[in-house]
Each structure stands twice: as structure tokens, then as C-alpha cells.
Length: 221
Ligand SMILES: [Zn+2]
Ligand SMILES: [Zn+2]
Image: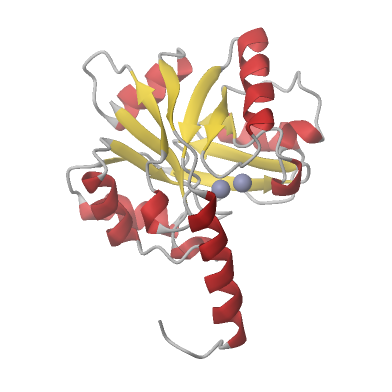
């Protein structure tokens, strides 16, 4: 099944995508499952699950540890930001989730493995993040995943609707198409990173629109 584990909604502060629109877009793109992984927030993730549509929604949060971002896949509670990477990972595991390192070598995006010992015990890494223009950091992630036998995930890291599902994770749930089935499959590395990069043109347009909107703070879209 096709799973996009890393999508940002309006509750993230840096995305304009409404949760309902993300679900519709996911269905249009042929995804089977998504996770709304907002920065230090779970409102969007909970809202997505409350709709109960065709798309399976895995609880998630993207936590800002003191050394970089970590996804708590399967986590349905707020884990505070600013904790050490080790403590953040421990709390994710205590909450029954998987610790996935997004854009692990992307220095300008708080890539965790730019700053932290690569022996940190995590469950998986994004080897295909659709936003990271430099393929080199995705390549480094692949090497790390291979050496450490980590699950490899693809994700859109979408901050605008069109990019939902650009990259995704092909998950072999062995027929258990549920939140637990997806988490179990990833834990056992029955998954692979698929998809393509989001067009640089669309990313540039998004940055431009954000700048313009900042100049007119009171204007409704
Ligand atoms: Zn991030
Ligand atoms: Zn993100």
C-alpha cells in the first residue's frame, strides 16, 4: 500500500493545507494511508482521523529535538520540543511509536544526523524526502539505512496540496491494512521509499506566496 507519512497541515504554522483538503488530495493521488506530521502539534493529525474516510490516518508528530527533527510515527500525544535527541526517541518509544528521522542529512532543515551521533537508536530514516533539492543528502541517508539496517521511508514533507504523495512509502502490510499493520510492517522494514521530488518551480512559488502573504497579514486568502 501507498503511505505518505509526512504531510504538514495548517496546524503546523508553515503550511496552508486544510486537513480535509489533504485527505481529498491523498485520495486523488491514489494513496492508501497518510500521516499528518505537524511541527510539535497533533491537532491536525487528530482532526484527520476524526473524518473516518477511505484513507487510513496514522497518528504522528514532527518533534523539534534540541539537535534536529524527529518523527514520532504512531504517537498520539504531544512530546515537548527542545529535549535531547535520545530523550525524544525514548519518549516516542514509550508512547508506542516509531522514531523516524526525516531529511536526516539536510543541514538547513534541522537534519538530525548533521548534529548527532549516528548510533542513536531509531527505527527508520527518510531516504526520499520530496522537498530536498540536493539528491546528495538522500543518498547519504540510503547508505546509513543500509549500514544500520533501518527502515527506509519516502515522504512528501508536503507544505502545499499539490505536493501530497510526490514521494511516499510502499508498505507491505501482509494484508493487515490498518494503523497497527502499517506500524508493524515499518518496524520490520517491510517498506521502501518511492516517488519523485516536488518540482522546484512549485516550491519556489510556495516560498513567494508565503512572503507576499506575510506583507498583508490581515488579508484572508
Ligand atoms: Zn522537518
Ligand atoms: Zn516536515
